[in-house]
Structure formats: C-alpha cells, structure tokens
Image (cartoon, rainbow, N blue to C red; front, side, top):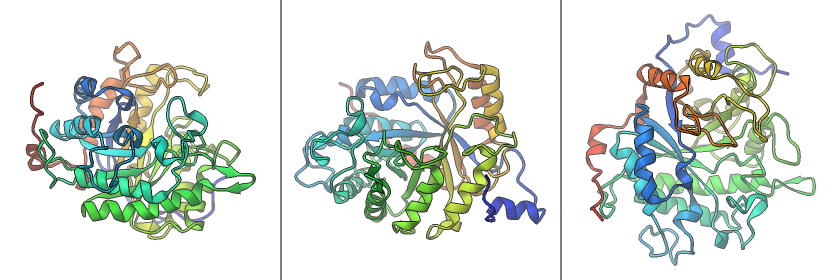
Length: 391
C-alpha cells in the first residue's frame, strides 16, 4: 500500500507543476557485470564492447578483496606494496580515458578483514561484513586518493573518479552477512558505521567526490534473507546515518514502467522510497541515483518474470518517461547489464554477444538522456589519462 506521506513528485503533481520534457531528467548509463570477474588483460576488450554502445557513464563493482588480497601495513597508503591496483587501474583509468564517467560500487571484503569468515556466498564472493568498519573506511581513503585526479599513477597518468557507492545491496544477506542475530537487526547498524566512517574519508581524499549510500536492493518486505527496502531506509535513519552522502536504489519491477500498480518497489511506487529518503538527515537535498535497473528476457532460478526482447526495448525507453525519473532529483539510471549471463538475462546483448532490440534503444537514449552537472567528464580530465606502457 502506498504511503500517504507527501513526496516531491506528489507535491509537484498536486501543484500542477510542469515536468521536464523527454531528454531532461536522468541520464542513462550501463553496467557490465562481467567486468569485475574479468582479468586485467580482458578489461580492454570489455571496455571496447561498452564503449561501442555510446555510454558515457558506467557503474562497476570494485572488489576490496581484489585490491587488498593481503593486509597492507598501512591501509590508508595506496602505495603500500600489499595493494594490487592492476585491475582497478585498467578499469577505472580505462573508462576515464574512453570518456566514460565511472560510478564505483565497493564491496566484497578480503578474508583478513572478516576474521576468515566468508558469509553465505563465500565461493563466489565474501558477503561477511568487515569486522572493523574502520578497515573499510581506510581502504576507501586509499582508493579515493589514488583516483582523485591529482595522484600520479605509474603508466596511467592522473585518473579522476568522483562517484563511490558504499557496498552493493547491503540490505540483502547474500551481499552483507549477517542481517540478523536472532531477531535483532545487525546489518543496518554495521552499515551505518561503515558509511559514517567512509564518507568523510572519501571527501578528505577528493573534495569533489560524491559518496553514495543506501545502494538498496529492491526487496518488498523484510524476512530472514534481508531487510525490505523501506525498512532499510528507516534503519539508516534509526541508526544514525549522517548527512553528506547521496542515495542509490535498485529497481527490477515485474510490471512495465508506466503501469499503475501497488507492487513495491516499482517505478510507479518510487514515491514511497522518496518519502523515506526525505526523512534522512539532509534527505530532501539528496539526489536519488538508480544504479541498477532492467527487464530480464528469460526465466532463471533467481527470477521467474520474463519479458520479450521487444518489451525490454520498449520498457527501457518508457523508464525515461516516468515523471520522477524526468525530474532533476534523479541524475542517472544505470541499465544492468551489458551482456546476459545464465543467471541474469537483463542485458542488451545475448549471452552469445548478439544484439537484442534494446541495444538500439540504449544507443538512442544515450543521445537524448545525456550526463549533466558533475556526471559529465570534461575533456581536460580525459587528457590526463595516458595509455599504459606496452608489455
């Protein structure tokens, strides 16, 4: 059931305010979920596939465990020999060099940061929350220092990355474990500690940085597998999330973008999320980044809803006709993902690499839904990035 609390959208509609035309509002971006699992040598090929779509914004996962496989002597020093930045340099500087603005989602803790415990999905990634939130904050300082646009990176020049998400879907147990101890919620207070320590460290390293918190998975209700979207946002307020960050949300609805529905979360019920975000400290001034969204074109063990490829292409375009998405409150919608995998067929390419109709829709939207403000990557920033030496 929809909340009766007023939202920015509801107030605008009640007042009869005009909404921006197509081409205003959110930009469109892309995520290649295969990138985080690719070797450093494979990154240029993945980037070339992404660049061919015309995208100017890309979200990427950055695994803490990949960059810090063993504990550094000084976690805050990005030059500590324990750090391995080869994948991050290739990916982030590669994006900037291609004129693509990165949005970096940092998660997947190394075993040394979790006491050797790997959570419930330890074979693929480590879902266990770090034992010390300070360890995570120190890593975020090192990361955002390396890519602050002033640091000279060997063989890469200067690489400026401004957007950093704190974890990925931390309201879900498969990404942040545990969610509960008995009946007591432990995930959200732990997350708030991590965020409150990390956000100022990111800003200290790069005054232009945009830390993003929430990163909320699209879950309707709380249960043993995690916290529902609204409960999670309420938890952020309850456990003391400080002002200073923006908010991000993931949307994977089972209904078309323009369909009236009580299903939550969906594009038509975004106002419920907005109402809760507004109650956070500094909430009414927070931008709401949609950093994952798509419509899947086949059923999988993880998702029983499937749409035709034609529907997927059409719904992608409809997203940018949703009133709230057309508002200035939403800077970007990231389409997840570039290429299908067997578990998540939401790509604009089939698993084989063949193009879906949505590939053309995406390229068209890139021309109309352009980055604005600090999402635009100035040519002067790109010029500072150099190709790594051969060999």
